[in-house]
Amino acid sequence: MLTHPRSLALLLSAGVLTGCAVGPDYRAPEIALSAAFLGQQGVDHRPVQHRADLTIWWAAFNDPLLTHFVSLALEQNLDIAQTAARVTQARAALRYADAALLPAANASINAARGYQSVETPLGQVLNAMPGFDRSGSSYEANLGASWEIDVFGGLRRGREAAHAAYAASEAGAVATRLAVAAQTADVYITLRGLQARIAIARQQVATRRQLLAMVRLQYEKGIAAELQMNQAEGSLTQAEAQIPVLEAGLDTAMNALDVLLGVQPGTHRAELAPVRPVPVAPGLAETGTPAEMIRRRPDLIAAERRLAAANARIGVAVAEYYPKFSLAALLGSATAVASGNLFTGAASQAQGVLGLRWRLFDFGRVDAQIAAARGQEAEALAAYRLAVLRATEDVENAFSALVNREAQVGILARGESSFARARENSFAAYQGGVVSLIEVLDADGNLLQARDAKAQAQTEAARAAIASFRALGGGWDAANKRSYSDLSTTTHR
Image 1 (cartoon, rainbow, N blue to C red):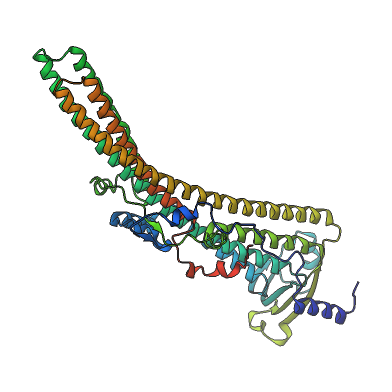
Image 2: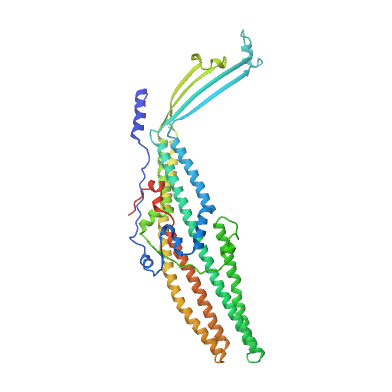
């Protein structure tokens, strides 16, 4: 044990100057990734009219109302407001960790007036002394300073963890913004798809009402049988029954969109009421590689920064093995005579303290703290690796859905044309008495199903495009990553 003051000073100086910090230094994990996504070729070769810049992909749908709602959501959404508040909290924690490395100073001024009881043992003794005055005053003014010398780097590891946590909170806020933009666009596309399906259902209802009116007229003239009229009535009710279900879904989508915009449900209902076509899914200007996706997706950046913070906290725990040194000083003045004598030479006082704190017989608890910190770091590493796998899964699923849904739209478009011609031919044949009403109803139902299926496929193709943009981390300017990109030095192979 070092007892000489000069030796102790040398130890403290060496520790501070060398900047040693106990605990493991952070190394970003290496993730094995493929050179390209499995569905990348199919997405890149889609025949599209427009291609979207990942930064503002929603504008490529060429729907001004969609762009307007996404902009409103990014300004007003309450999930974004919550993440902004969490960033503020993390920034405050970072300032606190930075301040822990600096000396702390405080000033105090005290003035006291006392009146001593003579009934207590002390009072009785004092009262027996000649000239004892039961009243007394004291005045004191002090300026103090203290500094914990971070010899073994526990405070520096704490600051490192706070920096990483702050970077994770910033990246998490960006991830929330991207999620809100994608959710807003997804709900809007779903809403337009439901409107298209409702319009198709209403067209079918109108057609079947015309057919029922014709059959009823023929029945009254004795040309058609009652069975045919009953079949027409049943077919009409089937078409009518689809509309309330679709309208309920439409109301739900409109309410969900308003909540995403941070307003009361129903606020934008009048603005959304006019029916508009489902926006066509644009192409992707760039898909990149899995490694580029990892560097671009803010949720993966946040997961990596949380891993870095967990690694730094191991060092915080390991530092408890070692002694902690502190310096403290006090300079002031105190008097019990009169305040006018407070700052005289006789009233001056000073103090210097070199402190040592060492959990010498508490290593069992320190071991437990280190084990807990290592467990948290292992959990963060597993969470990061899982986040990478799920991100890649998101991209592959979105690419597959986009390509296959657009192929389905093409197939259903051809089928719709065929069913439309078949319906026209069957109706003409029915008027000529060649076929029965059942053939007409079958042709009509097939046409309805084809149109409805095509509307659903168009909606799902647009939603798959949105999912692709979100999975690739689109929706923010990669040039403005700011602090958390600077802190993240991850390289993946």
